[in-house]
Amino acid sequence: MKNSQRKKIIDQFRVKPGEKVRLKDFDPAWMGTEEMRELGKRELKERAHAFLQQKLVDLAEAQELLWASDTYGVLLVLQAMDAAGKDGTIKHVMSGVNPQGCQVYSFKAPSSEELDHTWLWRYMKSVPERGRICIFNRSHYEDVLVVRVHKQLLAKQKLPPECLRADHFWKGRYEDINAFEQHLARNGTVIVKIFLHLSKQEQKQRFLERLERPEKQWKFSEADLAERAFWDDYQEAFEEALSATSTDYAPWYVIPADRKWVSRALVAEILTSSICGLNLSYPEVPAEKQQRLAKAKQQLENED
Ligand code: AMP
Ligand code: MG
Image (spheres, rainbow, N blue to C red):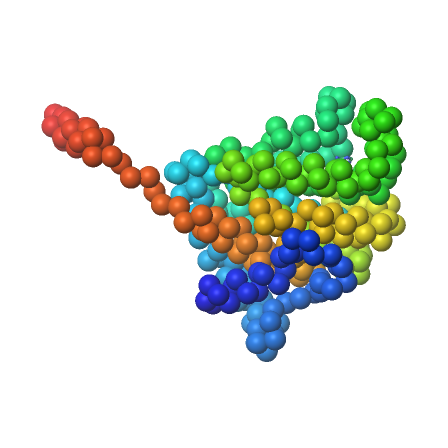
């Protein structure tokens, strides 16, 4: 597939800065353009697998260049409802990448030490160093998602009363997120944000599968079912957050997640093209160092 075709496909999932997101406008079961769908699901799925394999090779190469040039870091933010495939996406998309060049942080409910700091602190501590790809499996967005849906979590954040009473409290948080991401971007961090968009029906299927298949039962938590009851509140919180924080320097992509082979291929494409877009090349060795290298070579060759 041509670059321009791939770009066109990816573009339709990118939230344009200032755009008001309505998740209903994005089809979680999308599986290709009209032309692609004519191939039939089986063929399409096979091609998506082959595409993903190629992307893994490209990503490994791109990551090596990233490491060698030691200038940019890459932050991939993954957010989704439960069972949308965050863990599987990480496992598959990163499977070809040198583990030394990659970090994954899975954010859980904050510790008491974290709650003693402002909410962005723990995320700032984990951002990628130059040369690395870092994945936030859940992220600073939890503080405008789960914390917004369950207001009692906000009470745990120990904010002074006048801060809690501030007008436009959540708008303030979005502004802080944009400022945080702008700071990272201005200093050499490429930011890509993925919302894996799952339908409520598909979540039910995946939960049922977890309950029915013994090797998957460990994945099921009753808390997931409790969260499902807040589905609409979450969708609303996602819509607001995506609308307020998709920027040129840190765009959101709403990725169809009802079919895992679709979401994985798309995420791999987005991540790879974001790094390739930096047009990196291996650092050139200066003439003076070349001379020293030639000398070292000679020395080795002259050994007994
Ligand atoms: P899991 O990703 O399934 O291991 O679950 C992690 C849990 O931690 C989820 O229920 C999240 O909602 C919760 N969590 C993550 N970040 C935060 C946060 N900033 N505040 C409260 N809960 C959080
Ligand atoms: Mg979970």
